[in-house]
Length: 126
Image (cartoon, rainbow, N blue to C red; front, side, top):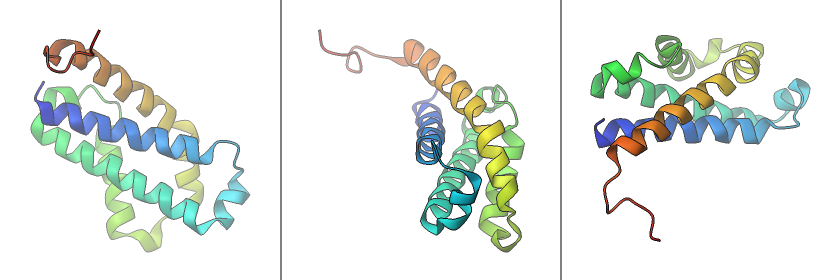
């Protein structure tokens, strides 16, 4: 796996976990009433979508192993280009129903690829 592909997986994993950590214990009503939280979540979804888009170019085979990759990119495009049409119930549904799976998939790919690309320099000190 190219180093850049692994970095993109990390970006997706990190942004996914950031969202999940940020909304832990938050109700939908609290989410709706907290503009900073909504914008933070949307910004993180933009990172996820952009990293997914780049991954398609850098390593298409790897990108194809992520379920719903095209939908991830499309959702990023809605946030960026059609922000005024973004439906918050849809965002919340994606967070609750899709994001944990994406986080788990990217973590698994990131960790499996670490084993195949780790050099002596990358290995932890013992």
